Each structure stands twice: as structure tokens, then as C-alpha cells.
Image 1 (cartoon, rainbow, N blue to C red):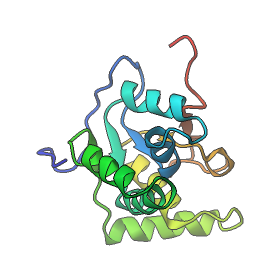
Image 2 (image 1 turned 45 degrees about the vertical axis):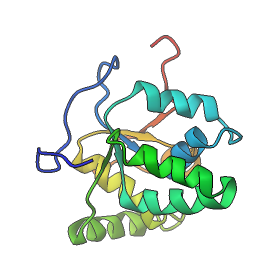
Image 3 (image 1 turned 90 degrees about the vertical axis):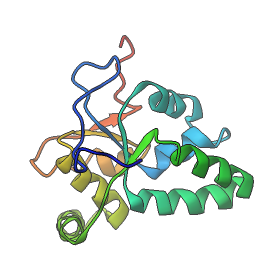
Length: 162
């Protein structure tokens, strides 16, 4: 998962003009990895078709816990093998990021928006993308990027022709 580009995202995509890095949320990953989850097929397709995939360390903690609880330790071990295969970029998340996430949580305190979701907004800004892979439309239809743009949500905003 290490990168030699100083942690800065690439600008490449696979067959998706205009789509840069995809910041992935717990809900998309859980649905993709656990077959009996809602929208499993659609989420797995997003993971197959979009690159690069960027994961917050906060998402990994949630995902590990939920996978073990819902699907068991064998599923958790399979998930960890997949995540450590190099197919995902594990983003760093330091003190400056935490401070920025705090402002996001504060801005959307009526939702409420937790630290993990706020980390996705911060990472989207760092990676210069407006695309979040999530099933959490309730939050991410309201939340804006740090520059004020609406977020594109996959798989919901997937172009059926594309």
C-alpha cells in the first residue's frame, strides 16, 4: 500500500473520464465484501471498475470491527488480506487532518456527522476529488466538499450508460 509519490494521489482512472481517486466509506466496503449486505453487487462492481481507491484509517477500523461482528473472523481475515494486497491506498491522517475534520463535524453538527465521515471529506479535498464511495446518502447528499461543491456518490450516481 505504500506509495512513492509522497502520499499525493494520482490522476489516473480506469475507463471513467473525469473520475479521479475514489474515497471509500465503510458502508461501500462492507457491502462489497459481505455478500448478504444491501447493494452487494453494485458496491463490488464499483470496487472492480474504479481506481485508485483511497481508504481512511478510520474507515479501516470501522470496517474491521463490523466485518468480524457481522460475518465472522474468516471474513475479517479475507478482508484484511484483500486490503493488504496493494489494491487500496491507505491514506495518512494526521493532526492537521484531525483539525480539519473537526471543522467539518462542527459545520454539520445537526446531522450529526462523525469523525469517520468527516475524514472522507478531508481526504477528498487532499486528493482533489469530489467522489465518495458510500451507501450513506443521508449524510453525503447534505455534506459539501471543503470547497463547497456537492459530492458525487457511488454507486448511486453511477452513469447507467457509462
